[in-house]
Image (cartoon, rainbow, N blue to C red; front, side, top):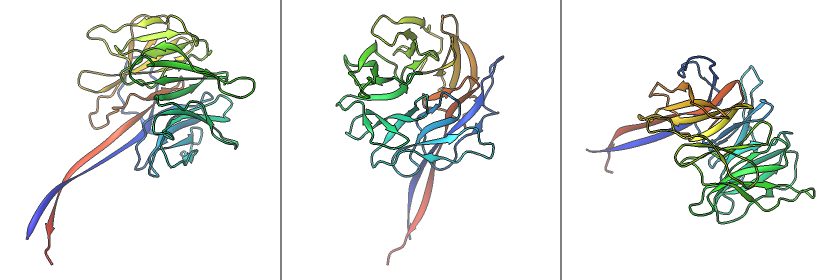
Length: 304
């Protein structure tokens, strides 16, 4: 008989969590799984009260938004929040827990939408051919910052505000440019500043209105480059980077500037975290760990 050889590729990505170390850097040996199953998670975010972890997942085919309750000791059970026929990514929950923001592919390009979780129609915040993505609610719930990743003059971080009539206004670009693999700018806990990463891996700190952004960190030739950010407190910014061998690392730096401090190193090549997305709630880091498999199979062809 005749034999044929073929390869089978599979990929999974789930969210893991690790306490934020306060001393010397640690590896990920003590990390625990927050989500499980055959799925790919690309983006995640912790609610401001620390109760929920929100994430996107393709566990039911296309990407939808889910959340798990981080306070359940028996193990969180995922709650599906969206079920559209198109993909939704990068969730963010308003501080009062009533509204879910995300970017969708409803119009075949990335747009920002808001879904009221207590019922009601989805609010279309942006609907353009551009690539509006990675929304984040302001702490006061009156505005959303997002990253337009379209190439060209429109690239940058925008803020769009909801008026007293409940309608969304015209987005305003507040920080030009962006990162190579940005997951969007992040509001400071007091809502007065926005931290973002640049194409060179630097970190800038700007206001939620147009103006000059302050350079907080400019990496040298051998320094880690910021890919995505999270606030660890009112004056400390964490960022994710990858070393020369492609291994992920978490670093932190004062919002006033200075040298970064390495917090976590992904030393195990069997537990990589390739995507730039992550989040932190001041106590723990949340990040994805990928499991990619490619095997060769041999089958015998039977002629009838």
